[in-house]
Amino acid sequence: MDKYKITKLSNGITLATEKIEYVNSFSLGFWFKVGSRDETLKTNGISHLIEHMFFKGTKQRSARKISEDIESLGGYLNAFTSKEHTCYYGRGLKQHLDKTFGVLSDMLQNSLFENKELEKESKVVIDELKDIEDSPEELIFDKFETTIFNGNSLNMPIIGTEKNISGFKRSDLLHYIKNKYNLHNLFIIASGAVEHSELINLAEKYFKGTGESLISAARKTNRRKAFIPGVAKNFFLYKDIQQAHMIIGGPTYGYKHKERAVVNLISNILGEGSSSRLFISLREKNGITYQVNSFMNSFYDTSAFGIYISTNDSSLKKAKEIIENEFEKIKTKPVSKKELKRAKEYIKGHMLMSLESTSNRMMRMGSSLLYLNKIKNVEESIKEIEAVTREDILKHSQKLLHKDNLSTILISAKNIL
View (cartoon, rainbow, N blue to C red):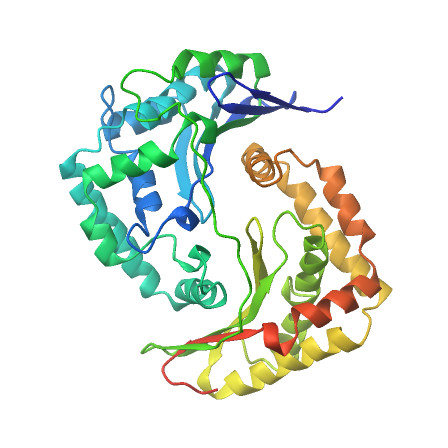
């Protein structure tokens, strides 16, 4: 019997639970299929600002009371905005599920969005934006996705622009919520010491879909423009900094593609962990970089794959040559059975260890349900990893690492490349 239970309520809300018998706590997430990809140039940043504003007070609770109501019970509330969804989540002991559910649903339906709070929180978000701009190791990832996703709303930064953030009015936020935050777009997901029937009762208790709710019960669908890869371009940004920061990469298979498992393994072999090829060649053998890692940020129909390093200006060209040499090796010579097995065990190990956290389990369930319209169990994921062959690595490396697919993003005090 499947350990996941999923119910679609008559008001449009989708509920999903995973009961874990041996824990006394829960992780509860309210997910909306809305993020910066659903914005325009004029509204870029509004999803993230709304996320902040939902914590600034309701008709029943002040901002302080929202946090105190949960923290006084030993619990925790937080939220995040991504490019394709927004999640408001809480953790707590099983006897406090009702309270946590009530606070989250109150925030999402009864927030006041007072002008004075909006003015203050806009300044907080602008300060967050400036922190990113002062941190090249964060900023470069925004610039990378802006470059490789050019022509699609995926290229916009989640946090938005200072002009937009400072210019949003209360009416803008409420209009956006009315159009995007509806019950058919809400997924309530819980993992841990939870009963599915209890979650259904709580959803029916707290979400009526009528009256003064800021969440409309009417069905609305976000229509997203599909990503179509274009010509790879390079990008340079001047910053008066000591180190050079560089990403080499491009778009690849999205969350829904089974080939994503192959790219995940290629990424691991190249730059994940201290036994990866680039860690050994760049750091251990040549000592020219402290930070080196590969990554794959996945979205519905595409992913951003790349290699990130930071190094001193005088070592950057050599570092780039080493990276390109490693790309050439994996494209032309099959990986050994031993190396492929190590990569598979690394990925499986990290996946399984992450499941010891109810928060990670809830996040995994949420991503799977929103992207695949089902909850993919761990056994499925492991089978996909195990099915990848040496020939798959060779074949997909040639496509992934083709020069026409790769962009180079550089942030440094001078354009060394």
